[in-house]
Length: 313
Ligand SMILES: Nc1ncnc2c1ncn2[C@@H]1O[C@H](COP(=O)(O)OP(=O)(O)OP(=O)(O)O)[C@@H](O)[C@H]1O
Ligand SMILES: [Mg+2]
Image (cartoon, rainbow, N blue to C red; front, side):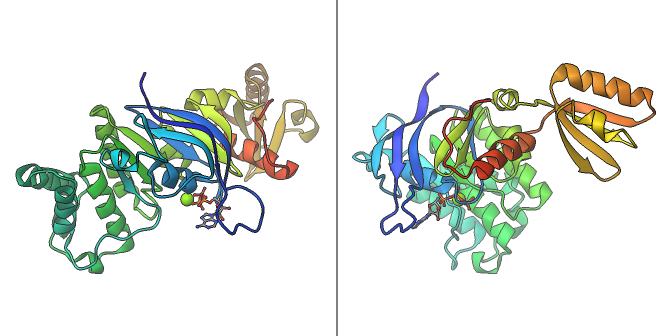
């Protein structure tokens, strides 16, 4: 499969950085084309820095990155013609209305009038913005402004889309409309680099995921790969009373309202579920969620305090 983004020992230190630590450190990864690639990590992990470097908005310090086979350091123009970006923080032009701002953006990207009109209409419809199309952007709520930005970028003909937390502040229905628009873009074989703090969203949409921690890549792979990389890939919820001392032998135990949550391996999960059911407890069991993986891997890195290297279990 072709590669949309290639990052090779990428490093970024912001000028004047006093902490002495790099925002990105030795970052090597490949984003395959035609799919959604999710980047997750806690605040300050380096996600936006990676987006801005690969979208050619920010210079790298060392290492190399290529986007659609062009070098970000020397071929920005060629890259910019083929990518579009929803930045983490930005506002569409205030003095235009919703329809005008989308249409103008598409025209500026070089689409002809007929095509720009058609794409504008479809994007308004897809993101449920048609009823707001004549409203000035300056009078929109924060979520509607965000939706307008998503509509602009998703309506474009760019081959690679950077979406930096596109659904932050969106209501649950609007979020799903953006998901649908993202899926449609991948049906057109476009590549999407998505950062998000909503791990359900990351899991739902991403073919592959990268977990950044303190500027480094600590986990990479399909959602399935990531789940299989933790020490305890199964979670069992036991509601009711169960002897605490017995539970510890199964794995990691967290108290929850009315019972416990036990992280464990598959055979132990089955055994625990059977035993708990026989004793009259209410039980549910399944593979860990991406959020469980995140909490375990990042939690471990915080405990260790040292900058993480590739995590080994
Ligand atoms: N313009 C800047 N100047 C100096 N340091 C910066 C700048 N932008 C980001 N940083 C630092 O670089 C590191 C990575 O920041 P970045 O914005 O890439 O993180 P992020 O993963 O996108 O976080 P968030 O989830 O909060 O959006 C942080 O330590 C941040 O303080
Ligand atoms: Mg960010």
